[in-house]
Length: 160
Ligand SMILES: [Zn+2]
Image (tube, rainbow, N blue to C red):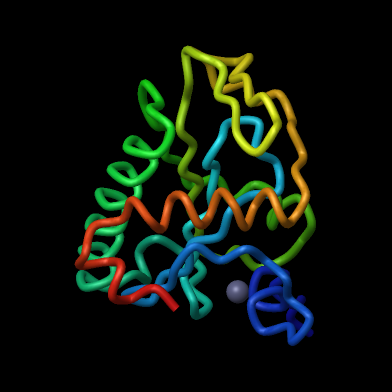
């Protein structure tokens, strides 16, 4: 019997309380609870795709436009120096689950950012290292509000 996909389980769960930034072109953007780098987010396919090769041209183009918009919005909001963008599907393999295509987009900062009374410091700047900084849902929702307010008009229309 096939093992269940934990990402599909989360997406379809009625009690899912993820802080979703937006949904567009078959992609769902979710803020990470670990904001070790402010604005860290997952970009995941809405439907179950197991490999990058399963994505259509339309999805790739949608992802391109989405990443462009998100980079712009986060840059205007918090002024990171650069972004890391990765497709790591290690956890599913480790847990013996089917992989579900998703990416991580992480802004990286040379400076500390004060937001909602918290200081966000990118202590691994210049490396892959992320020092964990867990935040509460109200803070995540405040981060969402700022980023969404900085999105371009094209994507903003699709915000749900
Ligand atoms: Zn899935």
